[in-house]
Amino acid sequence: MIIKIPETINKEVEINHPYYSKSNCFAYKVISEELVIHVNYKSDNYRAIEQRSIRSCEPFAEDAIKITEEEFWLLYNDTKEKLYELAISG
Image (tube, rainbow, N blue to C red):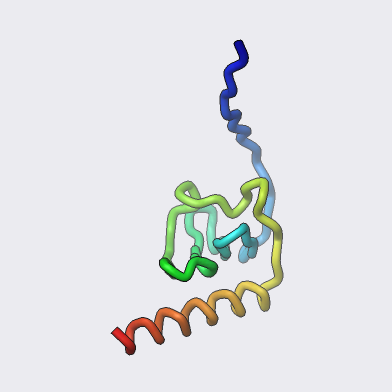
């Protein structure tokens, strides 16, 4: 019998703040050793911009890629606009 067990790898990485990354539907701005600005930018059903603990999100996940500050702000501002449109239409 073969049993699949998910494997978690903990590693230390040295970064400079701020650090920007994105995955399939999240963008991250690491602002300290503990805090991240987390942007849920892709879902049409749920968008969010929030401050989160770095432990509660995955700015360094395998599928996360490093992005530029400009790329982060494009995703952030697009999400902000979609939230604004939702707020004024509802």
